[in-house]
Picture 1 (cartoon, rainbow, N blue to C red):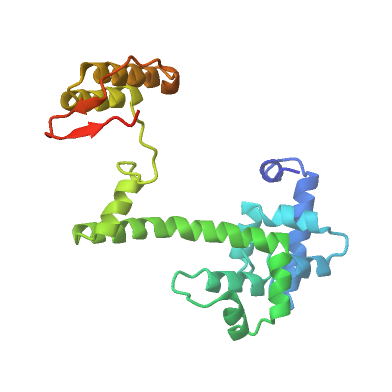
Picture 2: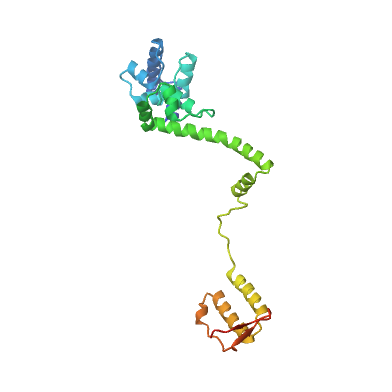
Amino acid sequence: MDRSKFESRLGAEVRSKEQELFERVLAAAVAADRQGLFLEVQVVLDQDASLSRGDVELVWGSSKFQKALVDRGIRTTSNPNLTLRQETFLQAYLNPLNLLTPQVLAKRMKIGLAELDGWLRQKEFADAFRVKAEENLQKFIPMADAALGQLVQQGDMRAITFVNQLTGRFDPNAKQSVDVPSLLLQVQDIILRHVQDAGVKRNIARELIAMAQGVSHLGVVSEPVSGKMEVEADFIVEDES
């Protein structure tokens, strides 16, 4: 059953099956607490064999049940799918001030590596680990932005470059678009300003135009030119043809 639907039926004037389930789970929780047991899902199940894990998890997640526990001073985990040891480990490992690896921290908390490995393979624990890590990351982003801003103010070029990349103002890996026809016209202008032979000029122009149009310049028929080509640099280059 959907949790919100379950909670909506708890306040019904007519006694519902949801209300009965709520009272059974709460009674089992109170019984466990009176024995001095820390409240966990399995502990509740041990008090009432007629309950299923799905029943307990459904009730456990409701705000009314959590309030009932608080009002009675009953301590429990915030996540019904985690044991107290698992939740304590997650809180310690994902503390922003923690610099220890999971294995070292587990050893200090007297958690065996085999037990830790089993937790990491457990879907509920892995999901809680991921969610908690994402929450911590969101908390770190403002801190990272502030630290980056301080480096920029200090004139750190790597930080300045990173900010420009982050904002899209500069990307060293971006492909620069080139206007090929315009580039070829500029090349043609440079060549024609220095080459004096009219026939050579026309042949160069024909080939550059062909390239600009996407046609192979090798297919252009050149007009005959003299055996020598004069340039403005006051020297002559012999035509190898």
